[in-house]
Image 1 (cartoon, helix red, strand yellow):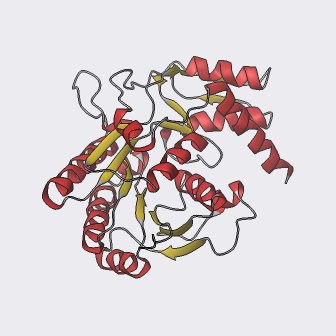
Image 2 (cartoon, helix red, strand yellow):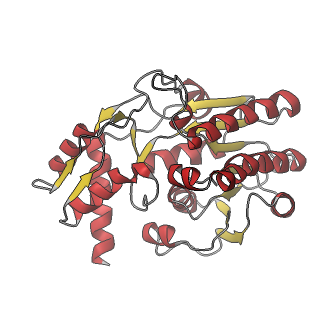
Image 3 (cartoon, one colour):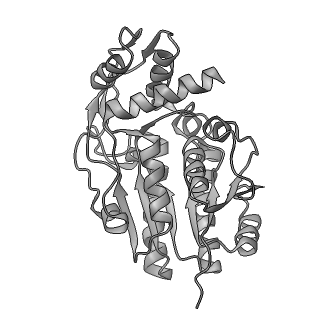
Length: 306
């Protein structure tokens, strides 16, 4: 039997991470059905202003519309789903009911549509925000609570329906196009250094800082893999402080006018496990902090020169 060509159905495709994954898949000739509530692909255009024709099928679809989502997945018959659609920490705080509809209701709709269509694999974004922390030993915001709920939904869909899934927990992902969410401050600092501007990161923390190109590579590899179960994995177990980030920026752009603030942002610092991810894709790609920042600075400067 001839294997069906890869076709990835993506939700949240106009976002930062979606843009990086689409750009990488397009470079490899993999077709993508890119869906979102918007058709504004400015972030993708920053990364790939010359995207090859015919590889990206742009559709407007809201994950909270179960019927429309099911119809589109049934029509396009993808080989796998990358589910990224979600509202971030500030939106979850400002409009919790809408955020729950997207982050939890939309997650259920994706899993239900995949079950009905017989999709072999779902890769979805959870978050390190789902990990317990602080004196309460629990997620510290609604975004984290919603993502933890999504992990449990995935587990139940394997238990009840044998729907395979891989939940990935990125945390502070930086790179061109990261302009939303509290931790986008790391990218803003790198951009400011690249363009000769001043910037203050409004918090200090110790956390996982991951280059967008590496995270996109993880999703791209997983999209063509096979596994059983509702797997859940961190993407890295390597942590740095914001002082380390600032030092790496200074190493790449000597004299950069970037600094950090004293406000402490509590983040999980241990207990990371990348074993399930390595089970699916093998070795996990991970640039050093300095190398990732160097590539980000270079890309911002190329964009500015355009």
